[in-house]
Image (cartoon, rainbow, N blue to C red; front, side, top):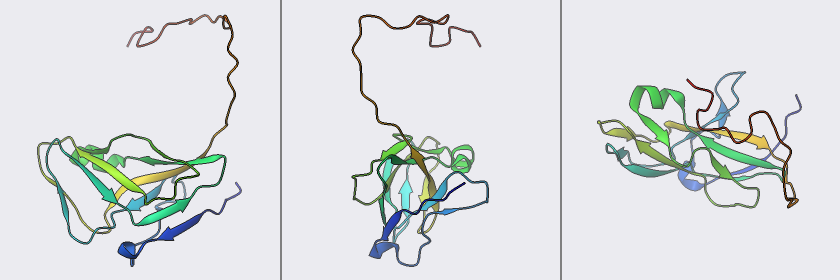
Length: 149
């Protein structure tokens, strides 16, 4: 598979931290790390915005998606709000992660902790054609569990 090269800027408060990296050869997501100087405590049932210290230049026709890390979710009840969060190709601000603590214990984020993962994904822009009816299917408008458990 052809690898694309995207541009990234590491901000001063991320000096010494790794750029987003794949943890294994088969990883789809790159780990994002917390670019903070002092620990941040996320109390139970609260939200915190954690900076990553990077600005990315996503190429046209692609988006970057910020997604939760499964280990944080299962072990600590920590996940990401607005997930997946989309970073558009024209955004040039710092990537930040909206973390929420669904557990009943405080969760502490330290500098360099892997807090989320970043996926780069192509997308297709479309045009709408407003019509009076759509092609019928066997499923029709069945949704929200209509096939059972």
